[in-house]
Length: 77
Image 1 (spheres, rainbow, N blue to C red):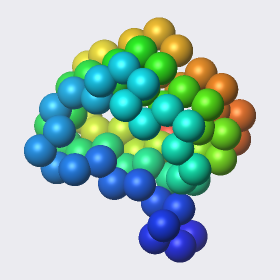
Image 2 (image 1 turned 135 degrees about the vertical axis):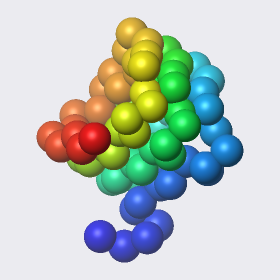
Image 3 (image 1 turned 90 degrees about the vertical axis):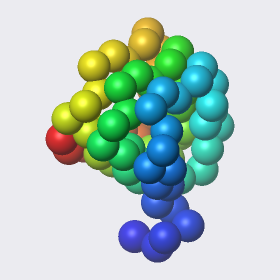
């Protein structure tokens, strides 16, 4: 998978705000260790998203955080 299709959330982010990355065209998202919350609709309508790397530090995923991500088929922790 090419790098432009992989989105790495910056290491210093501890919370992803609502709708922060809505509509993104990436296929893979790598979330950093230390992230504890993903806000509502944070990845709304990211239709190409098929892989998400969830950190062990993650304690909350808000309702609809990945709504409309039709290609989502793999999560890793």
